[in-house]
Structures are given as structure tokens and as C-alpha cells.
Length: 349
Image (tube, rainbow, N blue to C red; front, side):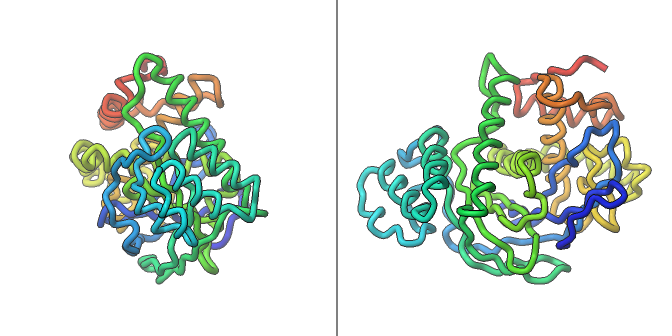
């Protein structure tokens, strides 16, 4: 799981973990290549369940905090921020959260400036995860410790900032007439390190994202960008009343009944070429929680990649997913209609 190699042009990466309000599963973003030239991409994955640390048990709600649609309440944020006692005494929420940010990043002025800017402009709060032990499924228990993205690790904060800026531009470019129903702001980022491991790279629930500075998928800006888009889908999936389970599962189950885990059979149905080491496509990997949610997240990343290609931000992604089997078109149209007002910039099949 600690390996990260491009030997024989196969990318070996590790798992992402996701917590879906009590369900468990791991999330892996799409591979970093266009599907027309994709080689096998392997993911060393295992089911995870994030421990409920108390701070994460609060339901998200607005309490007048700064930024657009800030979703994390004051008590949750300040309660999870070390040495924020005096900030909690500040009556104004905006000032209290800025105070906590300054204290959190006091050791690195550049990182502090980035965190304050993200709080001010987007309502995103940069903090740390609580120490805990995560059940890593067959991989055993994973020890997580809080770890700020400062000093040598500041690059992670910079990659988060550039990724979120790209998401904002993407949302504006894709749906110019009306904002998409796909929220990418007001997120509580909780930075951590996995001790002696490179997993999980990230996990998400309740508009909180755990970000592992040791994560094997978070080695460059592109990896961070696609990972975060994948994780943010899970947050939106929750916000749409477990949309993947409600809408995608019947068709998804039909694919699984037909193909099982046979890669050759699943080839035309997989949104991306990501595979689990020794297993099958990540979107269809058994023992991964309700894996239809991972299929939905892979579908979201495929939409993001294809639309970025149509906007000229990257090479065009071919073949187009919707032009595959009828199940693909059904899932694609449902996703685009639910989250992006039906906007598909790609040409017809």
C-alpha cells in the first residue's frame, strides 16, 4: 500500500476512505489519463469505517458564518480547533472563525494567508482531524493523527486552493445560465496523517473532508483535484438523499448480475479505468460498502473530465461514456439532470 510506482506504465495507488453517515466505503478518483490511451490502473483498496469522534456527529447547518453556504456550525469548528478557547469567546462568528484560523496556522504565515482567504471567499475552513484509529477492513487498524499542511506540507494547502478555484471556474463555465446543484464550497477540511501508511488518502461525510498529507493519491495537483471532486460528489450524494442508491442502484445491480467482477465484461460499463489490485474495476469492487456510491463518484469524475475536455482545459476524453451501453446513457443522463441542469457540452453520439 505504500508503493507508488509507474513501472510498466501501471499506476499503483492506494485507497481513499469514505464515511457515508454510517455506511462505509473507499473512494478512488479516476485515473490520470484519457481513456483512449488508458493502461491498467490498479488500486490497493479495502473497506474502511471512520470512527465517530464526536465533533463529526453534528448535523451541518448555517449559523451566520462567513463565506457562501458555509455548512459547518461554529461549535463544531471551534470544538475541533486546538487552542481556540479565546476565539470561542468572540461573539461574531466571522471573527471567531478567523481567529481560530490564525491560531491554527500561526507557525506559517503563507499557509495562514491561504486558509484565511479560503474562509473569506468560499466559507471553507481549514483545520485538523482528531487523533483516532480507523477500521481499515482487511488491512487492519489505521492510526490517524492531526497534521497541519504547513512548512514542507504547505503544498497540499496550495493544491486544495487551486483545485477549489478550478471547481469554481468549471461550475461557472458548464452552467452559465444557472448554478449547478453540485455544491463545492462551505467545506470543513480536516488535515491528518496516517502513521506508517499512505491510506486513506481522503474521506468525506457531512460536508467534512479528511485529507491525508501522506495520501498516495495526493502527490500532485491533478491527483488532488480529481480526488477532491470524487469526495465532493459523496457530499452532494448525501445532500440529494443518497441519490446513487435511489437512482443508480437498479441499473447498477443489473450490470453486476450480468458481469459479476469479470473485468472483460465490465469494460464497457466502467466510468474510468481504475482497478483494485487483485480485484476488478473500482466502481464495481465488492466489499467496498455500497459500491454503487463509488460508481456514482466515478461517474462524477468522468463528467468533470469530459466537460473539461470540451471546454479546452485538457485533452478531449474519448470514447464518451454516454455513447457506450444503454446503462451508461441512463446513468449519465440521470447524473447530468440531477446535478447540472442537463448540461452536456459533448456532441451527440
